[in-house]
Length: 454
Image (cartoon, rainbow, N blue to C red; front, top):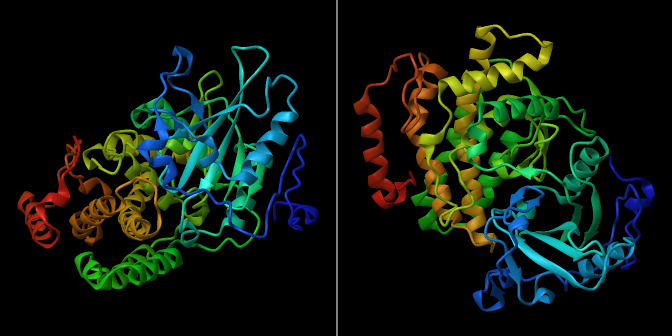
């Protein structure tokens, strides 16, 4: 699965070997050199650098370079193992001026790992050599198996689906730099870009990933919930109603098992920062496969729709605005683009309706999963992100949409999200019903928890 038998025999030393098609393994027998995740956020160790005009919006794997941060003391940002690998890699490039002289630029927008762009000056002057260093977030092994993730990364690379893996160290890896533009939050609303994403998702879902093809969604959700209960205080468990979520999960699983679900290899985290676009060729690349697994494809689409409420490159990256959830016209357009990949012809409207009905229900599951993720991350991850507030918003959206979406009469076109204008059809819900639900949850969680950025 991925690496050859030779590369699976991880050498217990720091020898680094690079090749044209590398799967580089560099694993030590300890974790003494793991970077302190707090260093990169310490204002005393950082200095903002004004970048030149051609680098105001650098293209970086999966992260738009808004407000780049140059580390004043780069020795504290990158583990020593990774530094040795970077030097060895740079020595293979004849046009690098000095293999020991690189710039470390931290990229904003990452919530699971810390991501850095590494740049070397070249003889050409105007052109630089770049790679990406990803340092795994503390406690993130709770959410996925890193060995499986690396195997997935390698498979994607060999199948032309993403960047090459250039090296691995104890707490992270080095990736190829992709010359393409990372999407912005606004790009997801562009009909032409959205159509490209739908087509790429279908291609991604059709990948024949080695290994078991079992649905992971429900087991992951239950396992994460158990972990959330373990790390939370009794007060937090009560505040978030974690003891009631087991029944919620079972209800959702039973409801969604009533219809036949198409299963595929899903990205499961398709936010705008994980989508790259080559504007010359109109080629879309999906990156960052930490959460990838086999799941109902409707769940993956639901996750993508929910991510339209987020903008991780603002002063308040944790704030969600669900008025930006795609309206009926956008959802239909996406569904048609996705399903037309099956035959090359426009699908029957009833088929599109069924897919989108499932998507809307899986949007509920998605809110629960990322809500639980936020609670756990608040306790284990040191990245500068308000995970708890993020979780509160996810749960609030779950509870306020649950009744209408799971009613026997309701379907996707009968449900309008917060702030969304009904396209053409009318809703079966009375306006006072939603307000009543909202008031109940304000009493439970507190009014201040529902502030949304508009």
